[in-house]
Length: 284
Image (cartoon, rainbow, N blue to C red; front, top):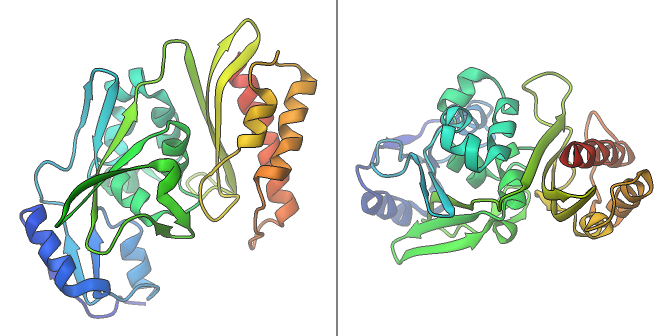
């Protein structure tokens, strides 16, 4: 199947991109990496009249650390994040998650901003950003605004992005000293979308975990922060009973839909298994 006909524009600045998006409204789509969008076009799941290619606009890529904040440009590729020594040192959760994203060819072209803006609930970056309490920088003709990752994802493929806005950067607070992280997911085959996954961060001391954050992917319409499970384990010695308490609490945090591979109860079972593995890894 081939993509439907569309016009193509490659603006040289954000201002030019904003003008195009504003004038064409819902008939325009932003091309930031294209690894999901091009597939959707070819399958005719998306039929925009105009593609606005922002990949040549300067200043939208790169990884920088300033003090206790890491800024990742929206056009930074998955592979650049995977290989970055700054990320490996200061935000290892992202380095742990990157190899799980599709395959090397896609990681070389796909971008963090494109993944986040698409808001696929089985994607790795949205859950990682929720777990790391990231902030997204959104820009439009009226200026810039910042939205926390926890407030950005509204529903399946629905976000806080307004019409004619572009996600330009991801801001991540550097975790405190002693923080640990782990990323786990279950797939049918390497490179497939996750049937379930968890991005976990915490501080470990004297056999207990504190500042626990558990963000799940693939088990809901958005990335989900499991607040009840987090509360069940927070500050307690990591015993088998404590882990089971966190696992049991997931029933109040997650209400997964089934899919062609897994029933809702199976999805919840996956999440329970990943929770135990993640908590044991954080404590180890």
